[in-house]
Amino acid sequence: MFQTPLSRLLGIRYPIIQGALGGSTRPVSDATLVSSVSNSGGLGILSTWNQSDSKTLKEIEKARALTNKPFGVNVAATHSSYDFSRKAKLLADAGVGIVTTGRGDPNIPAIEILKDHGIKVMPVIGSVRHAVNVEKKGADAVVASGCEAGGHVGTITTLTLVPQVIDAVNIPVVAAGGIGDARGFVAALAMGACGVQMGTRFVVTQESLLPLKLKQKVLRAWAEDAVVTTMRTGWPTRALKTRIIEEWDKLNTGDVSSGELRDYRRMASKRMRENIDEDSIGMGQVCGMLSSLKSVKDVINEIIRDACRIISGLEELKLNQQS
Ligand SMILES: Cc1cc2nc3c(=O)[nH]c(=O)nc-3n(C[C@H](O)[C@H](O)[C@H](O)COP(=O)(O)O)c2cc1C
Image 1 (cartoon, rainbow, N blue to C red):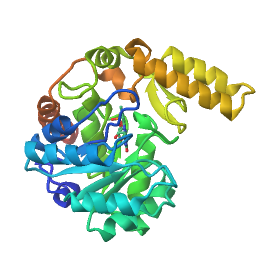
Image 2 (cartoon, rainbow, N blue to C red):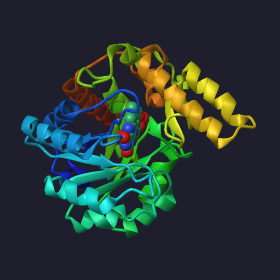
Image 3 (cartoon, protein in one colour):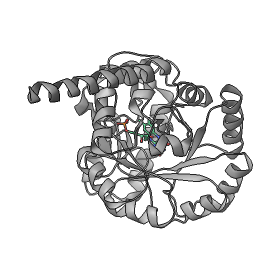
C-alpha cells in the first residue's frame, strides 16, 4: 500500500520520513525515536546536529540494535568549513546507507563525496534552483521543504514549491513542511510527491526526547506562534516564539554590532539551557493542528488508515458527480 519510487528506493513500507530533529539546547531525538519510525514502516533519520562523532556512532549502533529496518542519518551542509570527506567515511564505515543533508550551501561538495562512498543522498532544499543543482550533483531524491516547516526555512510555501520542484527534476520528490496527518500526506501524493517528511509531528510523540513541558507548549501553540528567527543558529529557523526570540528580533533590527549580537546569542543560549521556561524549540506551523501526544506507531498507522478513507471519499465524490 502506498508503494512509490521513494519507498522502493529506500526499501521502506510507507513513504513517510521522520525528518532529522536536532536540538540546540535540549536533545529532541535519538535512536529510540528513529527506530520506532523505521519499525512502524517509515524511515527514521538520526540527527547529528551539535553532536560528536563518537555520539553519532553510538546512536547508529543503538538504532541498529533496535531495528532491522532501514534508517538514515542527517548531516548539516551549512558550514563551508565542514569536513565532509571525513564525515562521509565515518558514516560509510558505520554502514550507513541513506543520508539527508540539511538546508545549506549547495556549493559544498557533500553530495559527490557521500555518493562516492555508496551512500544514497536526499538533500533538503527550499527552492527549485537548489533542487536542479542537487539533482545534477547526483542526489537520489530531494526533500522539497516549504517555509511552514520547523527548523531551517526558505521563503516558498510547500504548496507552491513541491509541484515546481516536481516539474523541474527527474528524481523522486518528497514534500516537507506543514504535514501532520493524512490530509497533508494525501495532498502531497496528489501533487505528485513520492512521499512526505515530517518533523514537528514527530517532536510531539511519546518517543521524542523533548521534556514533557516543552511538548505541551508545542501542543498548545497556535500556528502563528511558530515564528522565523535567526536567533537559534544564525540562519532563518522556524521555532516557538518566546521572550528571548522577541528580544533578539528587536535587537537585530536596531543599530547593533555583530559582536553585540554574538554576545546576546551566547547569553540567550545559556538562559535557555538553564531555564526550560525560557527555552524555545524548532517548530513548524503545523503545530496548530496537533493536540495530542501519540506514539510513533499510532501517528503512522493513523496516517495510512485515514489516507485510505480520504482517497475513498474522493472516489465517491467523482462517482457522485458522474451520476
Ligand atoms: C525541532 C526540530 C529540529 C530539526 N532539526 C533538523 C536538523 O538537525 N537537520 C535537518 O536537516 N532538519 C531539521 N529539522 C527539519 C525537519 O527535519 C523537517 O524537515 C521539518 O520539520 C519538516 O517540517 P514540519 O516541521 O512542518 O513537519 C528540524 C525540525 C524541527 C522541528
